[in-house]
Image (cartoon, rainbow, N blue to C red):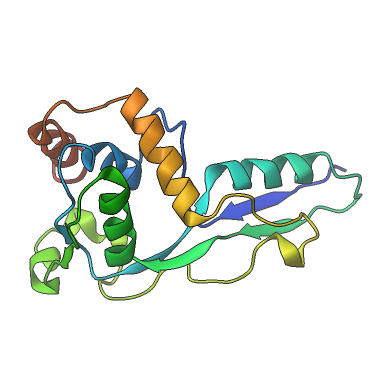
Length: 171
């Protein structure tokens, strides 16, 4: 027999994303210009370094039985998240919500689920599992992710981001 440990994170943000997710790409995009629009959803985000720490603790545990860890972080609306990204990138812009009707016309973007709902909203982190507490708050995670994106730029122009987005989600 063998022990199986499962760590299930909510949505990951943080530095060192070599092949970025949609949100990871947005951290590069916001360095070029403010994020002016956002879906009407909310999400739970957790720093990838906290999740990595949870994985290491889980793997180094001496427990004989496996465990399942829900590693979650901060519940936040995308409007608040994008606004904080704008602020930390040096822009005073508050994003507006994209009307649901517009989003429904883009079926490949349905990865965001039913628009207007909150996703991954939970308050369960490692306190319940004995793995310890989070080290990185949302503001620090955003700051460090933007710092990483500045050192590892993916796009020179907004059109580069739009091309990446179209290739990934529309074609």
